[in-house]
Length: 92
Image (cartoon, rainbow, N blue to C red; front, side, top):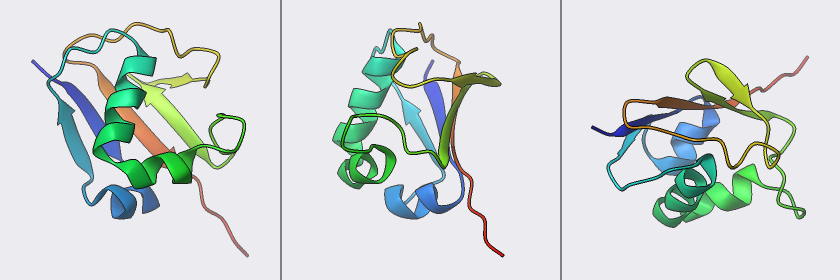
């Protein structure tokens, strides 16, 4: 069983897909992020600021719960988990 990743909004343009399945063994969110950055190198530049923090317009949701990065990077992930990457864009 895989870990299911969904890229919402603009992030699907960067990755070229709105859904991705991780079949490699990942035990933590940090493992997931390393895997995704290897698969989608442009995602690293888009998501992270110069300090390694997630930009303020992005959120990571694991099974319906917001993950704080990098504070919760050691949180466990299991096969069957769903991770959403959201971008909140606004204007006016």
